[in-house]
Image (cartoon, rainbow, N blue to C red; front, side, top):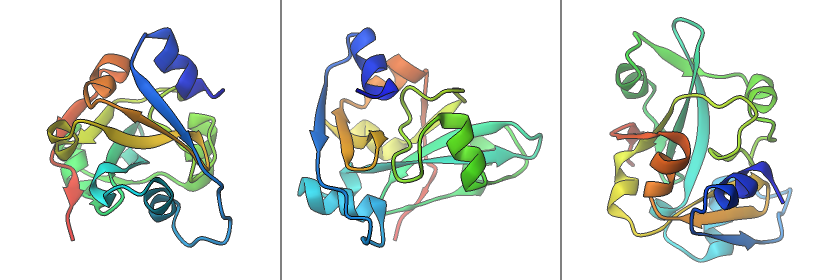
Length: 157
């Protein structure tokens, strides 16, 4: 049980937990999840933290097939610029380890922005709070649990 799963259960949000063997030698946490789940990379999302110009933190949730558009994220959050949060700070802030950071159940929740692509899907997969553990939810779960906003924050290949 992780804080992410506990939050989804407490809020009565439908979800499916999928566990797989995490291979520490795999070069990409996101691609490993795609391969283990056997789903399209555009339906598996990664959770990234960014620090805005004023020092505040926001969360960007984007498909693993994409990169986070920091300029778009900053504009969506009403800031002039954003940079990726240092890994140790992201772990401390969320209570999760890299490769297992979930948007749900973070120790210190931050405003969350989910790429608008998620709103076109029936199911979105994201980390459930540790490496090798994913949760499948409807896109509305982000709004219900996190008051997240959908916005165009991805750079597509």
